[in-house]
Each structure stands twice: as C-alpha cells, then as structure tokens.
Image (cartoon, rainbow, N blue to C red; front, top):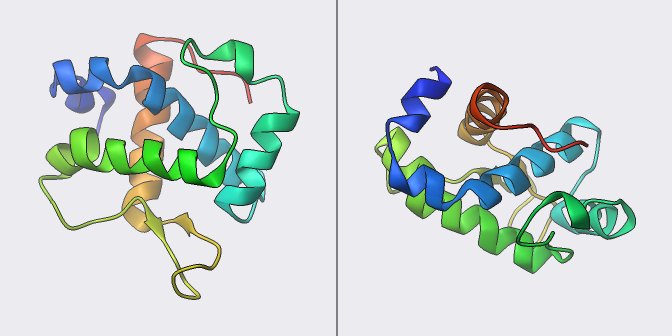
Length: 124
C-alpha cells in the first residue's frame, strides 16, 4: 500500500482530511502506550492539540468514536473494499478498552504516509 492508493479515492479523502489527522493522532497515542479511547481523549484535552486542527480536537471517547466510524464508512471501507471491518477491536469485549485492529494499524500507517507525503503531520 502506498499513500497514492489512498489519494486515488479522491473527494472522500479530501472531505475527511481533518478526521484523518485526528485518526493519525489517535494512532500516535496508542503507539505511546495509551490504553483506551478514554485515555486518548483525556490526553487530547491535556495537550495543546486544539490549535493544531481547524475543526477542533474531540476530547471525549464518544466523539473520537464518531470520527473513527465516519472514517470506516467514508474512507477506509471503500479503500479496503469492505463494509464489515473495524479500525478498532475490543479484545476483552464491548465496553472494555479498544485497540487498533490489524486493519486499523494498516490504516494508521497509510494515513501517516499520506499526511507525510501530501500535507503535514500533526505534532504529537
């Protein structure tokens, strides 16, 4: 996979650029040992992430979930040609801490490469 592959989706990718930046930061937080969307949301509210994104940074787990669901439907579902996948998995069951799924990790790597190639990576 290459960032050009993601760009080939065209308008859906460009329409969701802010969400892709947020997803990139979510992945960075997981890489930095955050264990749940709740921990990540708390981190986002404590860091100076607000000024980094035009739309503002979601600071609750539910709002981060909305961003992820939107990317699943509008960007990564079409990209992976699958309606039935999730960027997150819940290894201990629903209601427990979510982590990036295998496809979520691939999507994060692709997002990182895409933003690095065509835009600017938000600072983590």
